[in-house]
Length: 254
Image (cartoon, rainbow, N blue to C red; front, side, top):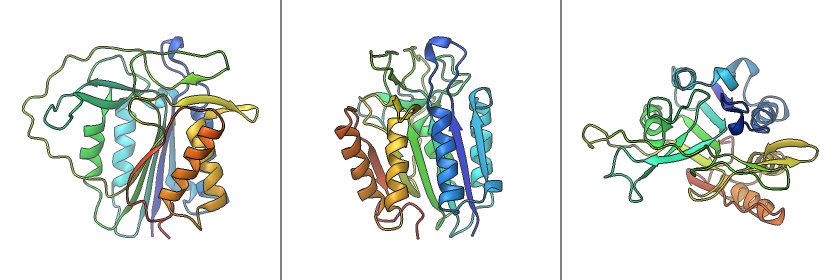
């Protein structure tokens, strides 16, 4: 069995107004959990991209590394912490709300050429062989403006930029994920970059890892996400984590 992980965290963007503070802590905490606390992913099979390393090209290149040579029984993990946004869809036949969810790599400039759309991810992940266990964690949100509140908390969405590109044809067929997707909030909500226990983290990632440490061997992913939802609500975060895919398995598909 060959387990591999790609962990992407972006705190610093070219425009200082878009800077975050907890994303790199998120992926360091996830690395510690999967490689040391649980010892399921060997450190040599974990790649991290932070800040300037996490360009669109860099992320896509390492996603291909993550998937290459995977065979049935392997476990793959992709964790992204950074800004997310929404843009007018390039595939109107696939999006009822007319919007694509995107992540914002370090070099995102508001254009389609520098974003990574949900459909692009789906096309990449569709090549994952049958029997490979895959988890995609996204601690970002999908909105149009950047705001802060008075409690030292920031939200992980990028300043609004208009996308005008249109797809040539709309015959794309998006395959379902061969695994599980865990995301920090609903598409209309904000994902908090929060100050918890004297350090910055994504609120979702913090409570996800906290519950995985306690329950990853005894509860399935559906139950874990519900516990995270309860913790977020109890601590005043107005975001509802979402999950889809093979949620009846535990986090390590054991």
